[in-house]
Image (cartoon, rainbow, N blue to C red):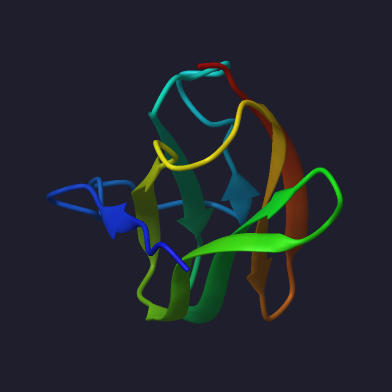
Length: 103
């Protein structure tokens, strides 16, 4: 699996009021896109990317994080054009959003 990597200064000086998975940017995208999410408290989090058939294609993060906003870059240069889904899982929150890769 291709790991994502946090953007430098990965906690973006935000004190979130709740859990939130943001829409990736840009979307549609070519080659790479940014995915960010908010954690209102220290928690275990996993951020994974799935293809349209539901197959796991990338794990961008899986571990424990402190309170804050985190942003990861998914480099999809080795993936085919199409619809992908990214999912954030924490102890008490789960959300899936759609993104489109166009080459």
